[in-house]
Length: 429
Ligand SMILES: [Zn+2]
Image (cartoon, rainbow, N blue to C red; front, side, top):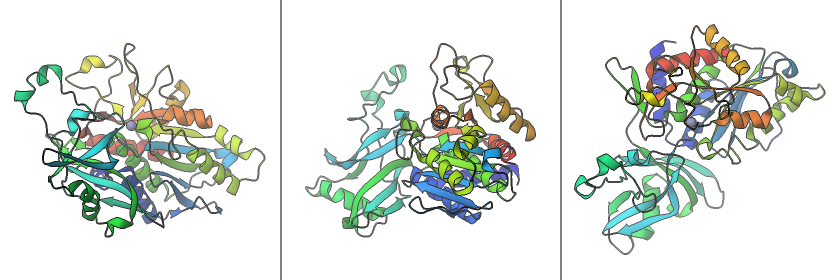
């Protein structure tokens, strides 16, 4: 597989995944193509040594695994975790708003978005609708520009460049949808929107989970096309590298049982039925052990042998703000995976788990970069500490370096895509 192929493929993956539901659908489709089959949480699981399966919860989190040759109690789980969600604007349950001849849609902010970056963008919509009676889900999207949050002219906001662009989430972050001051416009909005989304019978839709997304496709940029610009690099880039490595590795048997988990709801704290703080991963792992192992205390013994790589994007040093990084820990774009550590366990990394990841890097011929936040700044977090606390397994926090995290259009380096895939492949070999 050429270097360019993984980066090209990441662009395709990003464009196919405008919402967590689409990300899971994209991941599942690729797993199916690679011979994985879906398990139903409501059925009994019958697993064998050769099993390659995946299981989806709530349409937005997914666990995929390949059973290893060695007994689980001897080899444990080799886990890679990432998240499917990104900060965005979500449609309110009753979205229609009419003001001064405009028909607008009310949105809630999901996660820690840089709000100003959502202004003056061409916004489309994607997500899930739930049908009446059957309560069946349909994953839907439109590739048409439908919405925009217009910036205020500088003549009415003279100090914007000195004070920065502040946006009130309730009153100033209301996307415009149409010019319509008719009395029926508000009632007609949802059926119209569902029609545009290709739902034939709007009256059959009971409810929806829809988010706005940036129409602009992922692209290469820079003198040598060394950069990738896209929405949702945090953290679809890690879902993509985990998935690519799992599929590559799955053509060969390994001793350990490989597990890839991509969770929803990381950006809002992971507390949900399908989030990292919920029981999805522990229950799935327990069922795998129960289906395969006869040994006493097999689940706890397997966990004691397990290792988790929590993969989420890292902060590369920014050329215009280099002083905001710790001088000895300045990850560079294009220089490969970063091990993230924090003494207050905002990252799950220890010296021991860092050493294990560094070994996988060495096996792939790569030197990992290191990150700690400046001692006078507060540190972000990931699914790493949550997974470690929930399962009690050794965990390391890592990720590829990026800029503009949580902007509507983020940035990373094309060269890093292949590096992370090689390291995760080495881990799973
Ligand atoms: Zn993230």
